[in-house]
Image 1 (cartoon, rainbow, N blue to C red):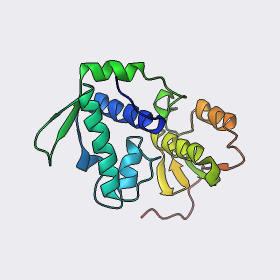
Image 2: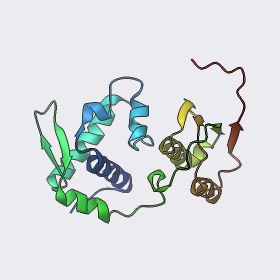
Image 3: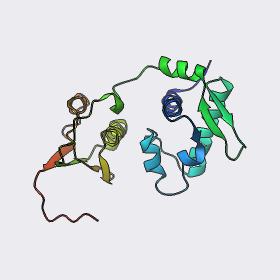
Image 4: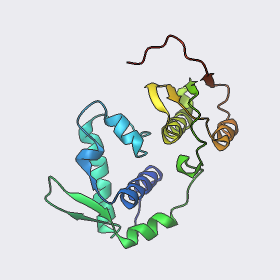
Length: 189
């Protein structure tokens, strides 16, 4: 049976879910060698991990994938340098058995776009990093784009469940949502 710690468990779930949805994974694509790597990890739910370097990030993910292969949850093909990883039937069953700690952004039904520009700005204290990371991931999943580390822009209302979750997490005093319903002199670059 797979033995992983709490942090590894969420990473295990993230990797298995990505493999189940997208079919395969190359570590070099997951963790590219350029500054956009943080954004790339955010898109598949790995944004709350802090790595000191690309080498450390690759080592962490690679080690976990090797453990998952040993447990029969994933399979690999290709050369050592270009290994392609896929989920197995056993891995899919394991993924379904992993409980979700809370509602994830993919569980929300997104309201239709109304083309009203919304800015979501937040300043959540470092002590509440998990909540801050949850908010970033949720905003990305709600099709909001990053303008700045703590400023996102979108053209649809946030689902009521997201706002309710922000209230439940006591984030409302740190989050500001502004709607812009008339065009101004903003220039899009």
